[in-house]
Length: 249
Ligand code: NAI
Image (cartoon, rainbow, N blue to C red):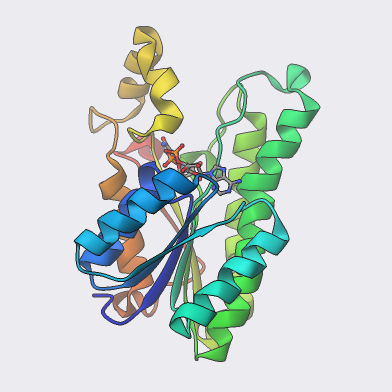
């Protein structure tokens, strides 16, 4: 599905980002793996190679504009083009109600989860336009479409990702760059392991997903792979929940 495509994913040392890298590799893409964590990022790159695809690890902080610019530049130096990008890096932030939410925690979440997606899009779009187009997939959340108590920064950032996705899609779809957002429900990754450890919270999370379980990273990666491919050629400016029915309640 992605044969000969060059595809970049941020936050790929763990969880959903690693799963995206591996499904992309399975589908034949050459994969640029990026994260702030070098050792685990290199592990993801090694797993991509085990699947028979080329991989390049680039350390980059998604919340720093210059790192995003350098990441795209290195991709072009290595592979000569960029066909798909998944802006996936993100953090959960602290859990606190709005009036008590620490100012520095707000800044961190917005910098990584929203500004980071903007920086990614900015440099990725410029690169894709040079070679006739591409596909960008921004990792939002169900909390891009619904509120969640004690997560004001995360909820605001993910809603922002939807707005940014729509604006960029309007600007660039006619030039060949499709831009979409994906909204995972609660997925088994290190990001939510704290929530899963508390039995009452875990039970509440299960109850919030009509399918009766939480998701697996690969179940998000399958959609990301399809959106990256030419099979999704008429899909742009859209938001796709992958949430076991969470938003249908
Ligand atoms: P994770 O914690 O397993 O992986 C996140 C990765 O992002 C880690 O490898 C981490 O090192 C990296 N990262 C963090 N800050 C970074 C930065 N500044 N620059 C580069 N890399 C950075 O988390 P998970 O669950 O795989 O999350 C991936 C994305 O999916 C995030 O955007 C998250 O908000 C989103 N998401 C996750 C859900 C879940 O339930 N796990 C639900 C909905 C959305």
